[in-house]
Image (cartoon, rainbow, N blue to C red; front, side, top):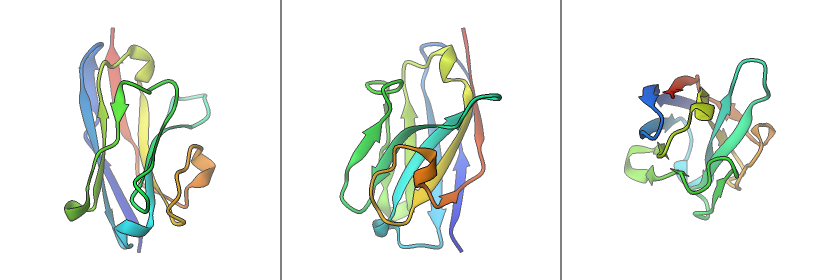
Length: 124
């Protein structure tokens, strides 16, 4: 059974940093792409970053490019979302997701499996 466990959310001041973790299990880590999306109440879910364990490719949305990175630890089957220079508009529930064909996904509809969300709140 594919499982994705997201953690690491919290409250941080603008300009601060936070690292989210997505622990994956139940599938071969090398064959999938793992991504992060976020959602604010009343708005559509937005894909923000993705890492392909298949070919090492990465994707970042324009809204986070240059501030967020998506490192991974293959030994732990874990993908992270390193968030730097956080802004109040980054406040959202963040979800990790997996795409079974291994290729980069930029849109939430690209993913096959989802973990639970973790709340990130950035105060001004």
